[in-house]
Length: 127
Ligand code: HEC
Image (tube, rainbow, N blue to C red):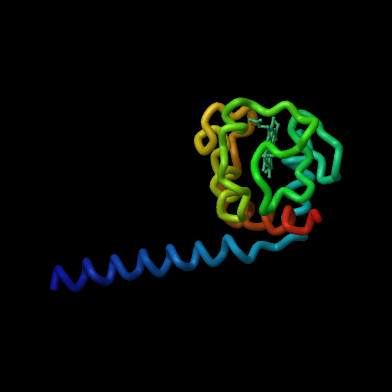
C-alpha cells in the first residue's frame, strides 16, 4: 500500500515536471514583448548595434554568449561557453548571478516560469 502511494507521488511529480518543461517551449511572444519592455529594456535594446547598460539582445537565441563585438562583458560571461538556447536562457533569466558566476547583470531574475517562457519566445522573434 505504502509502495503504491510512493509510486503515485513519483509519477505525479514526473508528470508535472514534463508539463512545466513543455511550457518553457511554448511561450507567448506578445506577452513576452511587454515583459521585455517593462523589465529588460531598462538595460537592453532589442535592436542590432544598440548597447545600453547591457548588450543588445538582437538575435540572442542560438548564439554564443558575449558575442556583441563592441560591448565590454564581465570575465564570467566571457568564460561562459554554453550557447543561448531557449533552455539556457530560461536558466539564466531565472537567476542570472547564480547561473553564470561573476556576471555583471545586476538583476535578480524572473521567478515566474511562464514569464520566462514568454520573454524567450519574444527574444526568438528578434532576427
Ligand atoms: C539592471 C540591468 C539589467 C536588466 C534589468 C537585465 N539585464 Fe540582461 N544583462 C545586463 C548586463 C550588464 C549584462 C552583461 C553581463 C556580463 O557581461 O556579465 C547582461 C547580459 C544579458 C544576456 C547575455 C547577453 C550576451 O550577449 O551574451 C542576456 C541573454 C540577458 N542579459 C537577458 C536579459 C533579459 C531577458 C532580461 C529581462 C528579463 C534582462 N537581461 C534584464 C543587464 C541587465
